[in-house]
Length: 149
Image 1 (tube, rainbow, N blue to C red):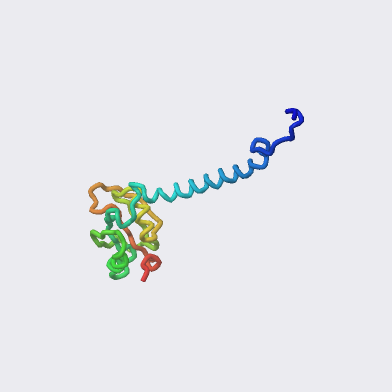
Image 2: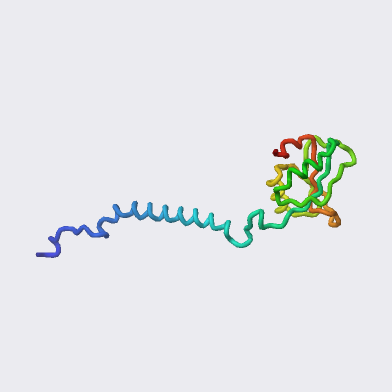
């Protein structure tokens, strides 16, 4: 038999158009699986701790709206959270309609943790390196939405 009269073979090289889509799908699925599992492994890396493994955030709870015993009630609502209440106070004037977090000497990472734990998103900063706590929570008239019974 002559080589020029030999019928074409059905090898991998001659059927590359059929194999190309299969290989592409395999590569895409593999890449998605690697991305998915890589993303999940970030939770177990050192430096990513659960809230129960982090130090408690120190706060002062201030009654900002004048309701009797509000700072104490708010503190009681925080008992199961990773928050250490170092003091209770009243603001000089009970004018706060909305609750707010005052950053006294804490950092932004702890602020985000605190916001997540208590649900108060509003914040301002009044840095004071000698303040007794990292944050002050001024409880306003909207306190009921942050005290979950």
